[in-house]
Length: 500
Ligand code: SF4
Ligand code: SF4
Image 1 (cartoon, rainbow, N blue to C red):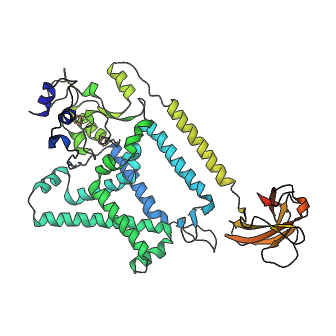
Image 2 (image 1 turned 90 degrees about the horizontal axis):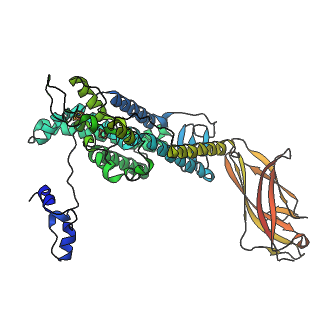
């Protein structure tokens, strides 16, 4: 009995086969237990149209940014690297044009990720999965690999015929050329990745002269392999099975979200149509399957919105072309909303609602995050003072009755110029300071030097009369002033003592 017949014969509320089999402790039929669906190979056809042009433009832009960005220079003076975008691991810095991020400022990268995530939420609530269809690296590189495949092996029908044909010299040559081209692109992609971590021209020379480190060759190999496998072989499987985004993007969408939609109310009942046939009593869909043949994920959008759909709009281009040929209005497949289509199907007017609670919330969070990031960047200090109190010993009682505490003082100077500062401690009457290990008498102020673009570390002893302490933990403030006496940085900590 086929599955359709079986479902008809069984009452709708009857136990499903797995439950019945478990109750009777019978072996479960192998056909029922298989959770594996064999991959149906997708052969997307070439398509022309507005959405395809937008996709080409974005593809070119994304690839240009990725491959060319490491070659852009940015003058930061003689002591700093001149690569505009650089993640300098040994130097523990990240450079992005005029912005230089120190390890202590990693919150800026976190802020960037938050900005990216909220932007994605907002765009998804407005336009569905356009990120997936237009700008996701998986889509961009898959599109590029498909273009290369089509240029070498021909369009959909030619490729399908060749794949079904017996092996031949021509077939082997074409497949070899295609995979060679894919590998070359993948290697360029992996090679470009490492350029972001060290001076690009130097890395390139080292790579080709065998002077790069094993780690560099490992990462080039790793990214070459992943690009080749994900964009050449896995393709739509990544979007459908591996990527978590389709699973939770539905949480950002509602009935007002624009998504690629087949207008069943206009297209059905579908059927073949010959020139001169009447359109009365039938829908506009001529069942040509053009929309299916161009789909990079191999789905039929006429079955409704599906998890596999990446909102690329190529089926719109394909269908519009058909509609123009058969003399019907374009837009049988279009970016539309569930609410709008339901209203249209009822013949009611409908207006797109851009402003709705979820878009307001996402936009508000985005604005707040942008302002916070801007403020963090604009107002971040050039010089920072960090003070870490010794934990052992907590304090030392000296022979004359004074109490001494030890501190590690770090001065971050993010500018390209060195500077001298005066360090004092406030909150302790009669406190004096010395550098750790110094035998000279203490002074109320210490002169410290902050070298350019570096962290200066000093070990400092603070000594105070026992009578100035109010308890075991006495709040004190380290203050760093410049030569003009202006306060540059303050850091609060404690001075420990035996109590009164
Ligand atoms: S159904 Fe249309 S929009 Fe969705 S992935 Fe396929 S071609 Fe792109
Ligand atoms: S391309 Fe348009 S007309 Fe052809 S099958 Fe798809 S929806 Fe129908």
